[in-house]
Image (cartoon, rainbow, N blue to C red):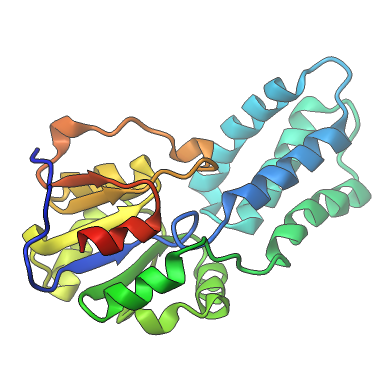
Length: 238
């Protein structure tokens, strides 16, 4: 794989992730999880062990329920049933649901520098927002963010993998050499995009969801890769 040092003149197609790339997301889930573990107040199991169980349960819930708040609530409920000596009563389930409700009610918090950078990129390049998750939840966040006018299209997909990116290439007639996937997740934004022959820009986020953690697999990469400190740096490269 070739490291890109300078971008050639001309319009590029930029596929841009949403959660934890354009706006904060996982930090709210982490707060809800901390509140859940505190509420559980397990007498024998330390918090990190409860979290490990939750991570395992969430993987299963993603398969059966997809991404989104409903899946998250189900994961919390199943974790409670697995580790608690108390039965999961309707009242307890309602309390657990409340932890997720705080996420749904939180305003969309745009990451600093994003709006200005999108305004700049919008005038020079072809921008497509690509996010995975529950369609209603994700489109709602896009609308509330105020960022939708910067994008020529919004794609909400159930999963981000190599076939997803190959499908986007076909759908929009993209040229792989001049198409970039920009995001914070090695698992969803970087590795599958590179494997599909696209270029990628990795913008790490300190609060990236643990289930999105993955080493960047350079052996599968066909395209170019950049790693930038923050979203605003895109204006220096594109």
